[in-house]
Length: 128
View (cartoon, rainbow, N blue to C red):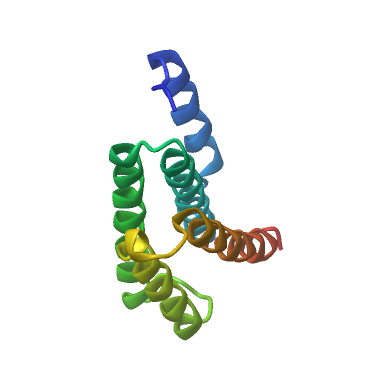
């Protein structure tokens, strides 16, 4: 994935700032959507045999997951904490052990599918 020119980055940042309206649910949704995009990028990089880029994307995923777990421990989320903790730990475990999996691409695809389901739940919850 080629780097975006500065103007595209600025437009993306502006768009992201417009989506955030300071509601914790919106911030939580954005974090999960970003995590999903990073997983897609990691999968694409792996399939193109660009392991250095895959590692950068999975490192970002790990940072996001640690942040989400920390927020969960501080009670920043109003959704089922136990379910999210299990979900985050499973996703983190999958990402950390990714190269030990029989099919990295398939493993990433499964994680993306589970994460998309969670994002859909958050979108429904935030639209109320």
